[in-house]
Length: 223
Image 1 (cartoon, helix red, strand yellow):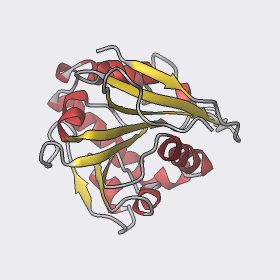
Image 2 (cartoon, one colour):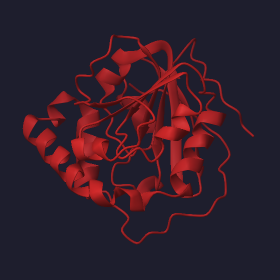
Image 3 (cartoon, helix red, strand yellow):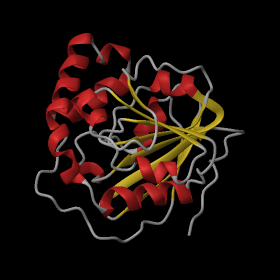
Image 4 (cartoon, helix red, strand yellow):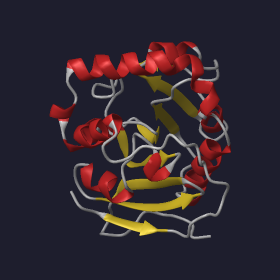
């Protein structure tokens, strides 16, 4: 349902200007919108197709690493006031930013649909192959759910997050990211009342969403 988004000042940083940016009609952008809209957007056939796609990309995924991933994530965690407890990284891939999370949280689990991605990930946190529509975790057991360039499954995100938990959504190339949703769409897709702080860091965009309390926005640092 609609919620509030408080925009913090943008951070000027080196842009990610790779030429293969995605538009609104990119196949993965279509999937992203449909999956966020409801469970009917994620069929067994689509799951297998997406898993196979990312299995095939795993061998070269390391070439996508760079400051444009790490710095926006740090910015989101810092200004979104997310830095303690148990973190679940969904869509962890080959673990490009998993170590960043291990440095901040008491417990981190890295999860992905693509087994080939997980096989190439560093052994810095437990790695689990999952379909994010059915996470093998108790309800309310996660303090931070971190999704970088990852599909949003609203019902399951809502289920596993603790009552005061935070959903961290990062698109490393902003609107040019194939798997992209604006902050307002992330908040609107989540069941119940949510609010978020959001910003941009170079080319990246991010938001940190929490369940709304008395209509107030979640904590954040406007520096």
